[in-house]
Image 1 (cartoon, helix red, strand yellow):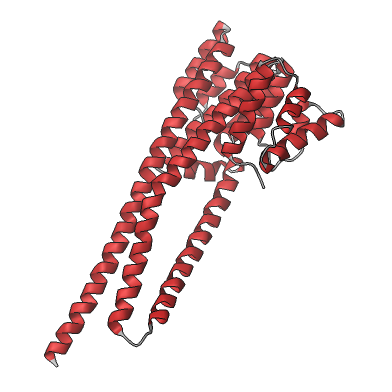
Image 2 (spheres, rainbow, N blue to C red; image 1 turned 135 degrees about the vertical axis):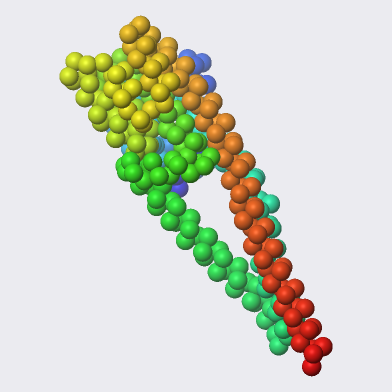
Length: 331
């Protein structure tokens, strides 16, 4: 099973702590192994140890299983390894996955009450109506309620699969990525998270002295955004043609104008390492706020839709109830 955000947050936090304390990667892996790691974290550690034993680099070792390690993680770890700043790289990843973990908890917490209300709506729409119509035993009514829930769960699962399929296409399809980014709250959160990933990898590559063409390519790919990746392919050509990257960024709509202007000025002033570090921190904070807002607003929208459904079921029930009474009185 692929490790979740919380698992990776804990894993990278412990690695960063050990490396900052002066431990080598192998010794840090040994210390972690002795702590009886959960299965998902043990899988990451196993990949690392097997790769190192076979003579691979740390980056190659972590990237043995592409289902466990993303492009962003490989980019930051690779830059940290090349620049001798692995502890800082692991801390970057710990901060990022910590933000994702908190956002996930907030979303789940926000959806709990709407889900309860939705189940009440199904109950109101099924049980009282069946009891009023008669002709069914208690077990028959209960069976109808279970079937209704099963159909609802199946529909929700199909919607989940469809959304997941669309999201999986977004990193390689600029059109789909741009379409998703237009969704209120969710789009803003995705854009800021993509920029946070872009800036983190870019900053790590700058500190490691990675060539600019490779830096742009690694950072844009790590963004997991089709829009940024598409723009990155064009921008990466600038160093090959002896041009500066700043003007290319300012010509592109894929990046915020404030960021592009700051990059162009920093490129002229020779302060890109400082500026990218500042932007990486800024975008991470902004993405955390955007995700927090989405986690607050999206459940409210879902709750409103569910309330409309429940109200419809209640009105339908009482219409049928009073309609039946009127028919009896007329007879």
